[in-house]
Image (cartoon, rainbow, N blue to C red; front, top):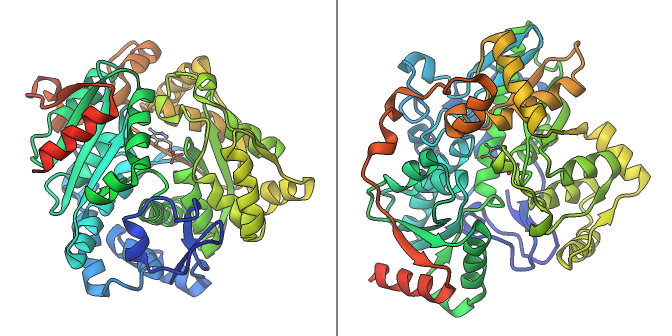
Length: 480
Ligand SMILES: *Cc1c(COP(=O)(O)O)cnc(C)c1O
């Protein structure tokens, strides 16, 4: 299995070579030369595997430069009941991504049982172990510099804490995160984790990271890297839970391997649902892939009209499902590459438009292909929908869902076909979004046992002015 760039300008590379990188040298995204294909017999043999064995069966098909025994060991130490515990008993927790039944054909797949209570832990925890392994083999080091407004930064820190060869410098806006998010990140005491609390908004943090990445000399000298949502290792790790959810749904609804299951995915950067698309391309019998957005509905517009017109920061709203406040879905490029028949010249032309501040429109035939053959549907949500759906799910089913998953619930209801089971991907636990949960349910959300006193733990961070040179100086000083 070798990897190429969506824009056609990269020689085929091995998994370990693209793992640590961000964009391909031509500005595109890395993608397998072709997707592994699974037969009905393959699928049947996977149906009863536990999470770890299933993860190996899927991921090993994408990796051919890490010996099988080593890859298996990395996967086995990642997907354990201890890591994905969420205060449960070991037995329950060992399912890693269990289902919650809402009704006979509507289920939620739990993806937020990892240490930071969001689905990003599903991939990021494996990435931490893969990074350590690959850096060790290459005798290299990496200094991850990132900006976060909450979920990504904490998932990255919990994945990389204590890992050999890795330091993390995470920039967050001073005083802008929720008390829970702040405590989650700043209570880490590991020596390789640096929290920089920047006097400014999230955009200022992101600008500093961009600025540092533009300084090629600094980047090379100090081995600056990233773990953002375009990272291929994250996508491939996410493919696994589409398989796990499929087999669990088949079992729960008395269907057979080969019958279709629909999925609904709260989306922002299109990383989560891109993994669903790849699972389908491998042969997993996925019916619809329903994209759920919030008020930032660029993707809803795209899947309804075929027009992709990303918006700038000034036209991106702050909402109560903040992890989906994204108006440029970086991983969409991977899906469109497949949709247009892997024509990298055309793909490059479309994204040249996007990168110069414009967008593009698919042909009517491509729009039909996307909706019918690829099964993409979409729906957008707003604050009052969110509140109403959190309430509805609690009153009808006794289940607390977080604001992002509530956006998913709305989209799932809009597109469900009662003859086909629908699986809603849970992307975070309600405990992370206490204010919105209080507004909807008039009670504080459930919080996993181990996190009871989180806000009272000692916090470790450095405040810094929004100035890229100060941040560079900080990095250099703390590496010495
Ligand atoms: C990151 C995130 C999303 C969006 O996922 P993408 O892969 O960017 O589409 C949705 N919900 C939550 C809670 C998240 O943290």
